[in-house]
Amino acid sequence: MDVIVEARGLRHVFAGGVVALDGLDLRVEKGRRLAILGPNGAGKTTLLLHLNGTLRPQSGQVLIDGQAMEYDRAALNRWRRRVGLVLQEPDDQLFAATVFEDVSFGPLNQGLGEAEARNRVEEALQALRIAHLADRPTHMLSFGQKKRVAIAGAVAMRPDVLLLDEPSAGLDSMGTAHLLSALEKLRDGGTTLVFTTHDVDLAWQWADQVALFHQGQVVAQGGAAEILGDAQILAPVHLQVPLVLALGLRARALGVLDARDDLPRRRAEAAALVEKWAV
Image (cartoon, rainbow, N blue to C red; front, side, top):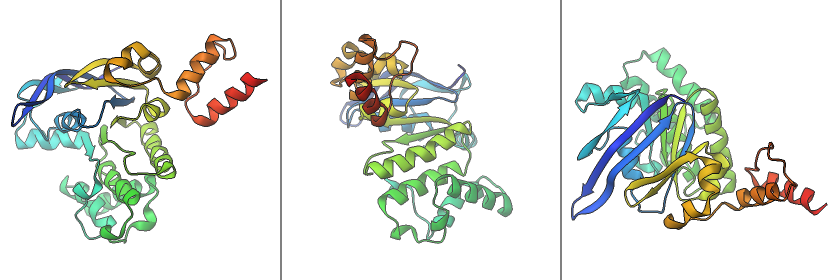
């Protein structure tokens, strides 16, 4: 697979000597869903802010399509058109009076004409299933609605890569399901998705690849089953094999699930496997 974004040797130390990134290496493959998995407060958000140029590393570099990125204004504008970022708290990104105005901000600042900007906004609102909220004041939205508006604002700029910081944080199970469904459509349209989480079950349900983040470094990166199915790899970062994956691996070991069959990703699939197992 082609690598679209790469971090090489990123280092960032906050005031007081707190090391957030410590020679971090990361590869993001085009068209994939990558989960950056680690505990809260580990520096995952800091990493995303480096990947879209908001923060500049004290050493190391970020590359897009193999080219090292620069930090002058023109280069940053080009960078952020290609790599969008949605923060964990949507209120940190919403500022316009209405949903339509907020989602319009990015396209209009790209210099697009009014008609083209409107088309992009309408497409983004449809993709996130919030077209009916177009005229709603942003301060009258629920938390989940705000999250989808923030994502729509990034999507309207049509980035090649979309970075999402803890996308399921603060959402109930239904809200998470709706959000993942919308993101899946974006992925089907060719957008590369990178999301941070501390939830191994979410990572297994949705990611193609996983990067384990610990003490400012990526300590392991690979296919979701390869990383999340290995208890020895997970133990040093205080994580456990996701329950659904553990059931699938056990069923495969017992011959209930053929080695050629896909491992279950969702609870419903695991439940069906347990029923087969019981029979």
